[in-house]
Structures are given as structure tokens and as C-alpha cells.
Image 1 (cartoon, helix red, strand yellow):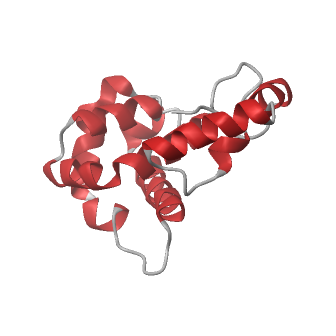
Image 2 (cartoon, helix red, strand yellow; image 1 turned 180 degrees about the vertical axis):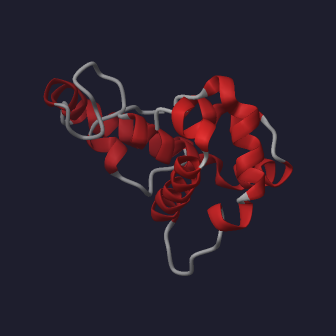
Length: 141
């Protein structure tokens, strides 16, 4: 992925070609360097993409397979999102929660683009984590 910077802000650049365009944009405008220095454009001052942005991007790129794994309650994407949420050792518990709350988390919203939809999914997931006694303490989301 192109990382943080101005190119990462263009939500329609989801495919491989888009990532090349995003990286080119970052280099052309030095936006990644500026973003890292200033902590803007989805960057932190240490050059790492903000956690919430990384979570949204992950869901955007993995929505369908994540939804399928959630219906089963297990899978590599559930382990990955657990790691992104700061609770990699609780992926089994997160998988159970996601399976139990699948219809709420992945409820289809009409007229919402994939980027906004990933924000909705992430928000719903975090709200269910906040209601779970163990996950609320384990995850750093």
C-alpha cells in the first residue's frame, strides 16, 4: 500500500493501479514527508499510518471476505483486524463476538460508498467491543 500522505486520502484509489497513483502523488507533492513531519494526511509524526485509518483501509479492502469469515466466527482476516484493534491475543473472542453480532456489524446501508461503509462497519464493531467486558479491556481500539 502507498502508506500515508495526500495519495492515501483519495478513496477511489483502491486497486493496484490506484496505489501506484497514490504513491506517485505522495512523491510528486512531497506530501508523505510533510504528513510525517506534521502528523497530517493520515500520518503520525513517526511515519506510521494512524491506527483508525489503517483499520478503515483494511476493512475497505477486505470487506467481503471479512464478512464471510465473520459469519463463521474465524479466519485470518478476523485475526488481522484483532491485531489492528490492539488485541491480537483475543482474536478467538473477537471472532465469536463478530459472529454473534454479524447482522448488526454488516447491515447493508443503501447509497453509501465503500469508504464510508468501512467507517460504519468499524464504528459498529467498536461499539460492540465496548459492550463486551473482556474485549473492552483487551483491545486498544
